[in-house]
Length: 135
Image (cartoon, rainbow, N blue to C red):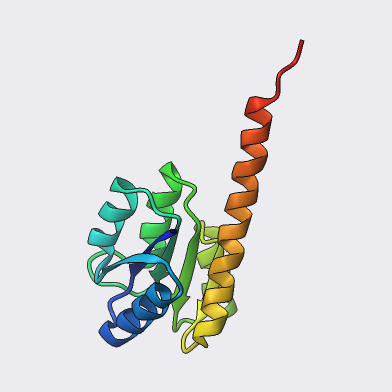
């Protein structure tokens, strides 16, 4: 079962996303601010992080940047900021994907499955490289 960290301060949205992910079989945890989200992102192992951009205490770009300094956990930004500059900035700060609110939950789930597939494939390839014997 994949573990997903949701860092989102909008209560209704975070609850909706959490319930949909749980319905799909994911284990979830929700944080309401950037500082708490950063701590959880760094202290625990997550298969992916869903990250809002505009958060209290620490913004999503800073959370993303700090996570990227030490971890390769896939990060999908979920935000109302829809300008090209905002999207490029999010991706340049280390996000793997960027989805603009409001979004269809089916699209978010598809994007999540896509980043998880990439990680699984990379892990399989790295695992195969490590177990190759040469004489």
